[in-house]
Image 1: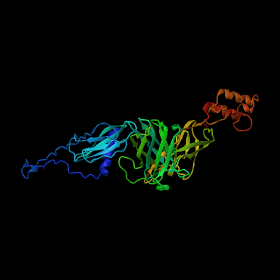
Image 2 (image 1 turned 90 degrees about the vertical axis):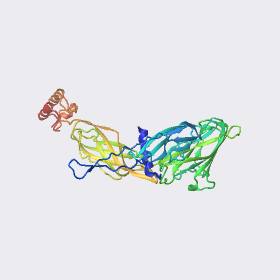
Image 3 (image 1 turned 180 degrees about the vertical axis):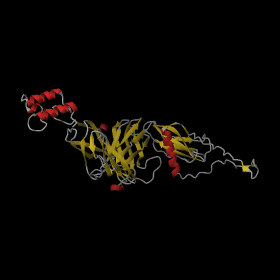
Length: 478
């Protein structure tokens, strides 16, 4: 079901952007004029209603031959078995490494299987247009691409780069033959740049696991400076052999400009090719090894908003009736939180009362709420912030509303204290009354139960005992 939804989305995008000129749909023939018939009461005849013939909604039948193919081989896409009223057709790629579709605006098309390092699926959609309703119907077909045999593959791994932060891209070697050296050119998209070291060379390195390996990394085109350098030339050799699946090298890249304002659907405009060109490899004896490149892609994106929320409570152990300050400190971890934030405190009811309406405090890293403890128990407080953030990438960006929330912060509120409540559990028990009598007779000091001195005179009098007995009967509610 998910793939069908994706396919429908693709079809809608194709319809919106397509330059395909569709011919008229199949003719349904001339519709005869209604035959007049006399009315039962005489007078002007009335026309008989004419039924509109049902439309033959198309059924796309996409097929691929072969359905399993090696890199570099031709794949034929055939939709000629599709049925119904079809006024136009288009093939589109849904998933997998990018390919070029020839004759995409017809029922029969083709593409060359791209280089892959492991078995990889390419999903193609056949979109048929119709004069019926619905006017667009989509069907999908998968093609499995297998790595080539008897050769080497230089594979650039896909990665992502956050604007303002460097990232590392990795390049691997896959080979079913012993390889002693490889070379190729790696070219970046217009919104990416290689990071240079102080000596002016690309910030690239081979891993220690490759042992005694010689490596050269040079900016291209030759003698280029700064932004004029669009790629690097790489040459790596090891006379002992480079093992299959080895990490050849890593380079540091950064987002260095705007993305194009248009892109080939369905690929995101923030995805940029890492083009691998002119690959060569040699065996241990120096003989050339057939070599292909598996191009990668880097997705440029704005930082994701992140923050920690730190709670502090004053007093830290409130009781019913206390005024309580709940302060939340916002610790930002990333630059993605933008715009005008609004802060919300949840989970206060029924334990705390007061103004908890959303607060807007531009530039502040702390938000404080003045509340009153209203009921004993544990309040599960949580804090949230709603804000505007930037999505996409430079040149293809947008502003959207987003939000972050804290984990649950438990706040325990004790019952209100009262005269005679020695253990502050919100009630006065018989043994606490007995302690109060002993204190009034002088048989126990004030430290035995400070709460028994309700009037604060430094001792226990008759009115203190009366207040304690009342609390024992009715609870610490008054």
